[in-house]
Length: 377
Ligand SMILES: *Cc1c(COP(=O)(O)O)cnc(C)c1O
Image 1 (spheres, rainbow, N blue to C red):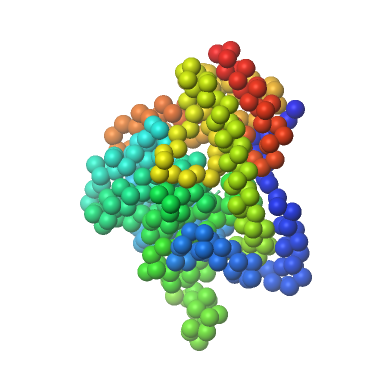
Image 2: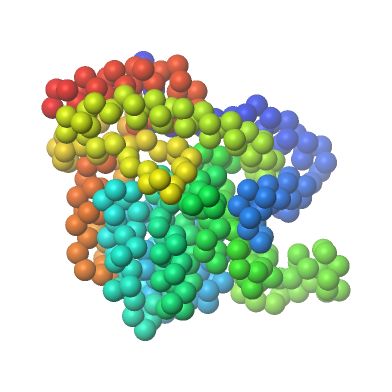
């Protein structure tokens, strides 16, 4: 048996759409497939404007540029997240300020944000871990009261909702990922959701090397020239063609992932009752997208043992994240506000199980082995 932790799903139309771009001789960015993807994202999220990027990392970098963040500015975020959440702001000279996570969802603890605000604070970056929404009502309210921007790291959260509203649509800006390990993919890929129309024009300019090329193509200006700082954040049409095939299948992908998630969840119910594991918790306000199925094990030793034993059975399981405040980069570029006990404890205990469309045939094998290994500990 060899059951990988992740296996990219293909709808079957990816190559024919790529062939279509090739046939059209239209390979640079912002062609017909990119426009389809933008329209789909705007319809699904309600964003004022959606722009494809090379990655969620690139979308976060664009957000930091749009906010005009500079040296010494502070951005509040969880330490339990992927490197890019912090790095995008560090590139502008800003300082990530970490607060602890909630023990139930592993999302930023909204009750800790206010105490971390200083005169330098410019933004809050909630990360919707595992596609389960942060407490956005409170976060948006805190930000409004303190004049802060909200940038959602919705890398894992495509098609998830909080109180019926799509994740990525609460902040002024939202960032999505289409990396091969996410639900909907283009290898590397991402998108910036612009919810506050005040950022719409400048976001196009920053994405197009600091030029007003997009306005020029719409016939809104008669010259196309350098207007602002910027870089090349737009993917080519081949990537967008691949992604469009995935977007067409997005509802089916989400449904099938949810079936797998529910299957795991039911299978480990008894084990949670007997105190061996803790299962993911999804608050009733959240509709999630089954991005991830994880278990919390008693401690680091047990987790190491579990991953080893699963590997011997041919099953790939992984852990993450090394808390950013404990990493080399984090020590150089950021600071923690207070102690982060849940971040430190839970990051040692979390293990992710295989989760990919097509796992239906093998999920019983994963569950049987996980159960028998956990019964041994
Ligand atoms: C995957 C991920 C990213 C980075 O996405 P890329 O598209 O690979 O740049 C950022 N933040 C979180 C929370 C992620 O899970």
